[in-house]
Image (cartoon, rainbow, N blue to C red; front, side):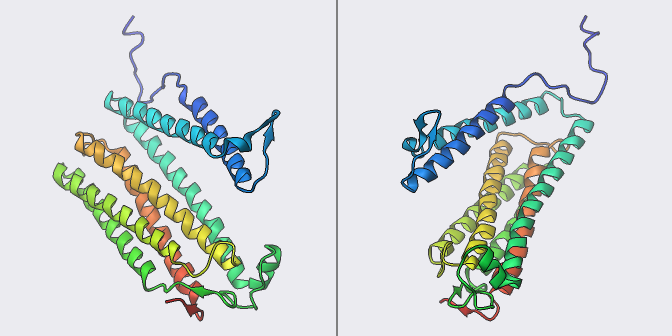
Length: 293
């Protein structure tokens, strides 16, 4: 009987899992909660099925977020368990890599949309302002009266920070391939620290920005592009922090370490996107404008 159920292929047929359904429920609750929270902030109601959900304020959103976070933890824990049980064969690992590549490609298209919005507003400022019902720009970019950040101050610091983090995560990867556990942990720890430092510098930059999100179309496109990148940095930092904890627990081998490899790919993607943001949004986008000091 056991021989009849023996696996004679490299594929992994997973057991029935509740996590896709639970994740969908959590995402739905989180989305409805976010709308209710925003309506409450505006002093409006949000009736649904005879109940004013705006009264829940942010609590409904928090419940959905906690469900999603727990699902992520449990689902990925199952994936790690499957890897330790030997289910991640050569074919399965290849498909996992294909999946990560497609995910990064989808993220790339996400940022293309924000770059498109920024360039459309920068190259055709008055037309974009009319469409967005924003203030007129005077035919120039950045709009008249808008003071911009000095690209060679905090943005340059953050560029150096991310480039350094790219080298430290590469160091950690090579240390893993050489079975150097201490080098792996040290490289990951430095990368996580640099990621946290980047987030702190960007938060400080936002707090002292001379323009606001709703002041002009420049502010809207700037904060959307750089803000979503900052969110991705936070996600990548958490991703690498989990890898650090796993490395300290003895996970990952030179032969099997897709979890770390996926985190490293994601972090390099974040690095490259920032280089484009720095070059075009900060440097090119502020050319000829008044620099706020």
